[in-house]
Structure formats: C-alpha cells, structure tokens
Image (tube, rainbow, N blue to C red; front, side, top):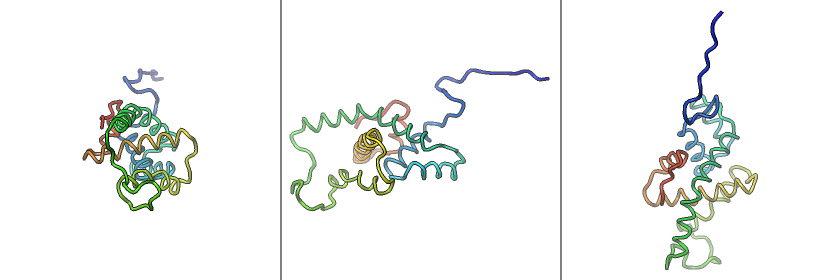
Length: 160
C-alpha cells in the first residue's frame, strides 16, 4: 500500500483549479470589449484551449477587473470634470447620431444588450460601464487593451 502525500497550495493559488491571469484577461476582453456572451466565451475557451471554464468563473473575472479599474476610471472622471474642455459632439445631445468617436463610445451598452440579451444585474451593468470607459481610453493612448487587462487582473491597472 502506498503513502498519501499532500502539499500546500503555492502562494497566490487559492483553489484546486485555477486559471492563469491571461485566461481572466481573455474573458474580460471577449465579454466586455468584443461583446461576446459569457456562455459563448466559455465555449470558445473550451474548444480552443480545452478549458472547462464556467460562465460564472468568467463573470467573476469581470467583477475583479471592474473592481480594480474603479480607481483609474475615477481619476479620469475627475480629470474630465476639472478640464476646461472635453471631446464632445458640438451639435448637442439632441442632434442625430453622426458616428463620431465620442458618440460611438457612449452607445456601447446597447450593442452589448442586443448581443448578450440584457444586463442581468446592476452589478453587471456597472462592471461593463467601468471596463468600457477604461479600455477605449487606453486604446486612444495607443496601448494594447489585452496587456492592460492582464496588468489589471494582476492588480496593477495602468493609469490612463
């Protein structure tokens, strides 16, 4: 009869099955930036990487990213409020959409709702708003969105 060996988890590992930071960043990128539903993102990870990730795990990754992005998004918000001028549609809010960049960035919740069905909670809508306000800002600064998300899930979100 053999012996039973057990070891402690390595530092930072908190569960028997844990996915790497790139998987979490990929989940956030696909669900919040590419607007793919959680179930379809889970299927992509299973088919392409053999990872049996549940939609709940993906939702948790989004929640973690949104929580870690609150400070950078609040810093941008404060800078915008203090700025003498911001990028906005000069014709006012009552004008028809003309697809300028400011309007496209503001309209993203509607395509997300159409693709994914709806926001199932206020928390999901809030997370989407935080992440979708952060990523286009990083993109406009010529930063790689995926790299920004990897750093975010590591706990070091780059400041815009």
